Image (cartoon, rainbow, N blue to C red; front, side):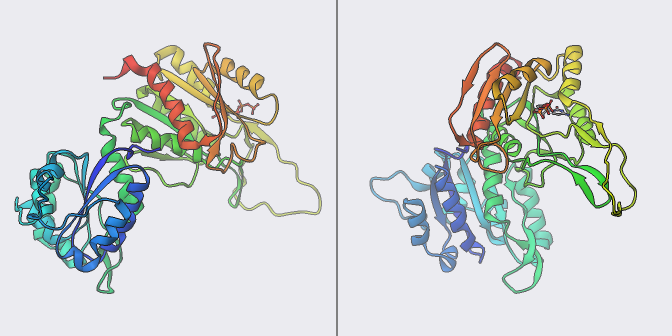
Length: 406
Ligand code: CTP
């Protein structure tokens, strides 16, 4: 579940070829549980029909400022006041110019002028139009007034030319919309640090030792905390997309992750260590590729730092982070091993999962975990999506941090 559930979003569509991608945006928003009212300019209807959006949103599509049903509220008042977000995608140079000059000559620009709710625009236009001083100035005015923007990307444009001005991809736009909506979430004001992925310990310039962690649980934790309004630092060894608004710290090795965690925690309310940190690294890293010989190869390994034990020492001195959660991925004696780690690493909770199961643990979207608390509580959660496991973890962390929020 995302923070789009039960949100009312006006999706403004203006006349650009990228309007066909807006069908995907509408579909993603509706699938996530948002109520989506599509408002099209007349030129948008030349690129895609209102029927497409009506079918996707199961709601009436608005195209005309003066089309006021007798039993309805005046659309531009209702659609500017009783909403959570106005998202305009694509936003043409023309609509941006009108908004920047307070013009209200159609339903969409009237809503944009009348609303005090968050406004997010996804511009799309030819490079020359995007780079024109008039557009630059208009965009600047809008951003100065608090309008948020998903920057256009470089790529193939309607003209066939390659350049800057192509609308960002629907998934990116939806991700930024979630970030915009996060501001009223129950984790606002909380600063959290999450680690993710399996560290990689180099052996020589072409090889490394690692483990099967995909990083999905850690990235899900970061995404859910972001959706709920937290300030999130994601220290990740995984090559996965980072949710918009999350501060990423990319690391490879356990030593780099140790440094990044110790740098991040002095300002953190909570640390959740979902990363699978290597316990051993090759004792030396060969400067050149190790060549094979006829005999076997012995590989001396050296211990890495136990990051959570370093965190415990720091917390004992400073009181930060206020809440610390670890993970225990086990193949045997799950609860005994997890409880021993909870005590040894001085954690508030440990999230135990049996990685021998096919539907839980590494490289899948679901997880089946047991949460063990320092107070002796043991809660076994059913099989659920990693984002739902993340929500369960944050529910507990947020309650424990409750009185630390500004
Ligand atoms: N962890 C850590 N530093 C390490 C290894 C692990 O901080 N060098 C953290 C992990 O991020 C996880 C928790 O400790 O939150 C438990 O990790 P796990 O690998 O299960 O525990 P280990 O202490 O390494 O114990 P073992 O390998 O013996 O099971």
